[in-house]
Image 1: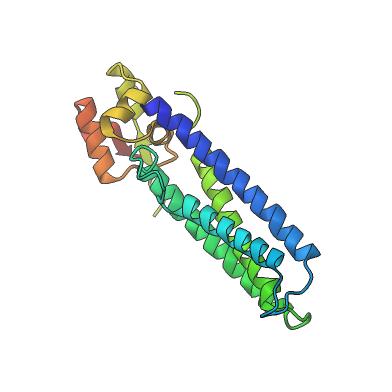
Image 2: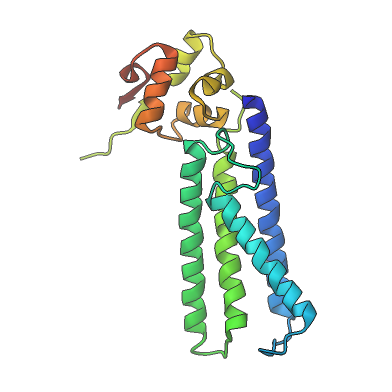
Length: 145
Length: 68
């Protein structure tokens, strides 16, 4: 049973890491290639893209900072080490998002920035850093006994 | 005042008891990773976990952990 928890833990770490990389790629792509969205006149494809991006952010944040799972709580994957790792990941994600917000605010003094320019980057930064931090912390202790 | 660190004798006591990390983890209902990180000093266990480990190994918390 404990060996199974090791495998599940590694799988969880890999999934979160893959999700974080994917989020970074689509987030950066969206920022570099997106045409401005006209409020109230967004195209269907823009709505779908935005919904997908938000969904990915929410899933990543939930998986790396909370014990939320659709499959129900797994006591072996939610022990005190994982809780400590999630707390550290939350802290790192929050700080990263704050720094991103501060940088964007300062940049707005020199460059015209809209909400749709800044928010995706701030959300992506926070979720990405939290997910990567969690994955790195979870990697500790995976060495063989 | 210099900060004192926690020294872990968990690995020695566990080995003497003939248990693997996985077996001990199952006894105290945590993951093997948690046992590994406690043994390596990477993670400081809570009071509850320390008591559970001591009980599972039939010893006292002071035998498992000490201040340097």
